Every structure is written in structure tokens, then in C-alpha cells.
Image 1 (tube, rainbow, N blue to C red):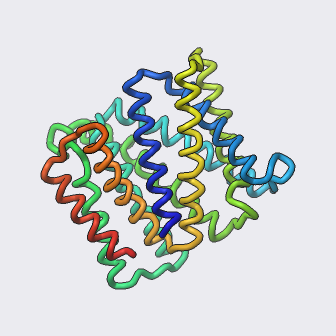
Image 2: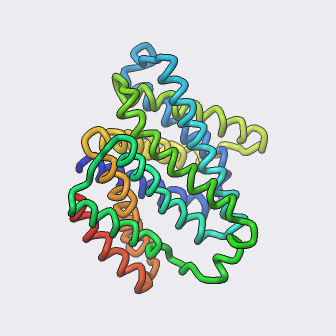
Length: 280
């Protein structure tokens, strides 16, 4: 469970960094380009240097697909938030974990124990409660008035991207996860750098500094997540990662940003703690 815990900590660090960048009004694509440059360079060094990275046609193709999906999912989230507001996209992004869990059961024949099954069910029940805003008739109105298509694409994109890490572990073993991540982040770098140039976004000293932090957090959140999938069943990793991020990010929000917790969020945290115990 150590790798899973480290992946959660890094993921929450990414969320905190994004929130700071948003409040500071930093250019998005320039920040992402620096982030992916640092992640690519760090993965190359961690793999043993440029000459030590082992590439194959299959690994390169798979890594390029993942890198493209990383950036596509981010673009899609921004677009969907503009069309539907914040509540529905964030809720669907969290609920998309159902796809890799089902894939682990149906495709890779992972069978949860009775307690784990209860933990999985409880985890999915917790996810909608974790939103800071309620799902109301007003927040659902944009979804019902033509936004359903975008919502489904977002749900599928995030779920498929997560599940591909399970596919890689089972069907495409690599010498070192860093070899794959060099391709993943290198592809994302090429896309976001192109977008930053087209939009004429500048890399300031603050963007550079925050991009370095974000790049290291991005690299290790993915690396630890891959290692967690190598040690634990997907049916445990995916829901535990989701609710672990919810619990820790909520605590950070209270302690760092002084954000109040509504009663439903407190209930979600208590249920999430129970779900984590059952999953473990």
C-alpha cells in the first residue's frame, strides 16, 4: 500500500499546485509545457540517462497514445466545465473509476473478496458526496439540455486512460516504468508546447518554478500509481486511489485554504475511511 499512498500524496500535491497557479493567473499551456519538460527529463535521468532508455515500437506507440490521452482529457475537462459548470464534470471524472474497476473484473478476471466488494460499493457511494456543491436541478439543467454527449466523452476518456495503465501492466511489461513515462510525457510535451507557442504564452520565472514542482509531482504520481498496480489488484487500486485523494485533498483544503466542510463532505470522509479499511 506504500506506493498507493505515495501516488495519492503526489496527486493531491498536483491539485494544490494547480489551485495556486489558477489564483496567480498563470498561462495554462506554458505551465503545462514546462511541467512535461521536467517530467520527461526527470524520467530519462531516472531510467539511467538517454542511452539507457529502452524503446520498442509497441512501447513507443502505447506511450504516445497515453500521452495524447493525458492532454486530451485535460482539454476536455476545461471544455466541459465551460459548457456544464464545475460540479457535473468533476463528479463524472471521479465516477469514471468504475470503468477500470469493471475492466479489471471482466477482462483480467480479478475477483474481490466479500469485504473488498463492500469497500468498492461504498467507495462509489462516497464519490458523489465528495463534491463541494450539491447536484441540483439547476446544475443538471445544462446536462439535460444537450450536454450529455460531452459528459459521456469526459467519463469515457478518463476511465479509459486510467484503465490503460492496467492494460500496460498485464500485457505490455517494460524493463522500467520510467522507459514508458519518457514517451508518455514526451508526447504530452510536444502537444502542450505547440499549444503554448500558438497562443504566444510566455514562460516567466514563476511559471518556470511552479512548472518544475508540477513536473516532479506529475512524474512520481504516475510512477507510484504504476508501481501500485504492479503490487495490488486493479479492483483495489482504482477506488482506493480515488477516495484517498478525496480524503487528503479535503483535509488540505481545510488546513491550507481554510475551506469549510459541509455536512455531506464530513459524511463522505467518514464513509471513505471505512471504505479504505475494507479495501485494504
